[in-house]
Length: 439
Image 1 (cartoon, one colour):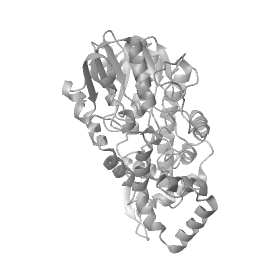
Image 2: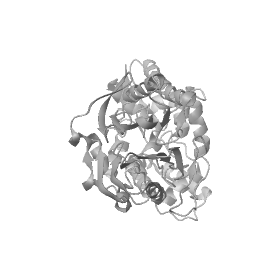
Image 3: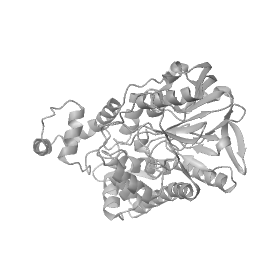
Image 4: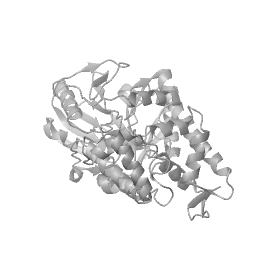
C-alpha cells in the first residue's frame, strides 16, 4: 500500500505538487464503457485506469490517488507487456476499472501462449485482480511472487501489526491535528449518522477530551485505521493458492545490465527481468523490459521507513542502479506504482531518481540531528513536535507532515519510530516512563 510510501519517492517539488492534486475531491470515477481501450501518448495527463502507451506492446494502466484514506483507496499504476508469445502482467492492481483495462489490452494483442503475472510485493493493492487471467485467452497461466512478501497475503493481520508497532513508542492522538469535517468523514466511514455536522463533531471531541478517555482511544486508533482502509478497497481476488514464489525457479542470480548488476530472475529468455530490491517492503521487486529500456519500480521508491520492513538503503541502491543504467544507455523510461512518478524519461526521470536519494538522506540526517540534541534521550512524541515545529516549508519533515494521516501517508510518528529502530538508536526511559532514543 503505497499511499503510505509515496513520500520520498521524488523531489520535494514533485511531492508538493502531488499534495495539491491529492487534496482535490475525485469521488466520481471515469464513466467510459468497461471494455474501452483509451490510449494516451507518453507525457499526457493520466486518469483512473487510463491506458498509457509506452510502445505498441507495452503500456501502463493508471491508478488512482486518494484525497482521504478512508473515502477512496490508493490504487497503483501497473504495466502490461506483450512478449513474443507471452502476455506479462506486472502487478494486477485492484478494482473493476483496472481489471477492464487489463482485459482491453489483452484483447488488443489477441491470444497468447501464456499469461504470466509477475507480482512486485505482498500488498493487496497490487494483487487484487489476480483472477483476471480467468478471462484472458491463453494456454498457460502462472503467477510469481516474492516469498518474503507472503505475510502480506493476510492483509488485515499484516497491516494491523505494522500500524500497531508504534504503540509502545508514542501516543497516536497527541499531535494529530484533524478538523471536524475530517473526523466526521472518518466516523461516517464506520457507520456514524451522515447527518452529523462539523459542530456536533467538534462538541463530541471536547466531551471526549474532558472525559479523559483519549488515551484509550489512542490505543484503538491503529486497528481502526486499518479496518477502515481495507473497507475502502473494492473486492480483491489475490488467489493465494495459485501463487508461486520466484524462489521456486531457483535462487536469485546475478543479472548484469551494462555495468550494473542486479539480483533476480529472468522470464521468456530475458524478455522481462525481475530484480529483487527490498526497499519498500520485504522481498519487493522491480521489473525491467530490455526491449523498450523500461524499468517499472512498483512501490520500490520508498526512501523513508514507513513500514517495519522498509529498508531505505535498498531504495537508494535501486535508484543509483537505475541512474547507472541510464548513463550506460540501457534505460530510457521509468515508472512507479504511485504518484508522483508516472512514466518519465531523460532529465525528468533523473531528477526524480535523485530526489528519492536526497529525500531519504535528508530525512535520516534530520532525525539523527534531532536525537543528537538530547544526549539523555528523547521520546517520539517530543521528537515529532520538535521536528515539525522547526521544519522549513519544503523540507522532508514538512512534506511528510502534510501527507500524513488522513491524506495518504502513515502517521509521521510511526515513521520516526521505525527510523529510530532501523538505525539502532539506544533506548531508555524518561521520568514519565516513556521509551526514549539517543545516539
